[in-house]
Length: 119
Length: 119
Image 1 (cartoon, each protein chain N blue to C red):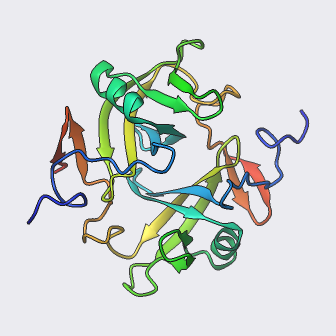
Image 2: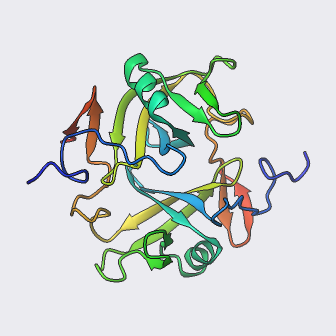
C-alpha cells in the first residue's frame, strides 16, 4: 500500500486554513478530558517535551497546559486520525483539565434541549 | 451559580464562524473512534434520532453516519464541554468508524516524526 496520508506511516498533518489541527485529550481510563488545537509548533513541543502544549486561539500563543495552574498533562501516547487533521492525546493529568475545576470539561450531558450534570 | 454557558444547564452551543461545533466520537470502552463536525441541524437530528448525524464539510450536507456503509452509530450519551463548542458522543458502532475499514480512525500513533500502527 502506498504511503498515503490516510494509511501510510509518514507524519503529515493536514493543517487547516489557520494552521491548526484538533487535539482531543483523554486519560488512560478512556475519559475525554478536553478538546483544544495545535499548530506545528505546539505539536512539535508536545512530541519533544512529552507534555501537552496547545495553541490558544483566544490568546494567539503557545499554551503549555498547566503552566499557570500547575495542572500539567504528561503525554503517554499521541494518536493521529486517518486524514491527519486530529490527534488524540492519551495523558496523565496532574489535576483538573477544566478551568471550572472539574476533572473533565465534559461534565454535562445533553438531555433533550437541556443539560444535566454527569455524576 | 448563574446559568452561564460554562457551568449552567442550558444547551447553548457556541457555533463557530461556519456554524459548527466539533464532535468527538468514542465507544463505551473509552476508545476515540473519530472526530467530525455538527451544525445545528446535525445536533438536533442526533438528539432526536439517537443516531449520529454530522455535517460533512467536504460535501456541505448532513451526513447520517452509516447511511451508505451501514455502519451506523447508536448514541448512548451526548456530553458537551465547558464552552459548548465540542460534544463527546458515546456510541455503539455497528461497524468500522473509519473509511479505511479500521475500527477507529486513530489507528496510528506518532513516534518522533513517524507513525506506527497501534496493535
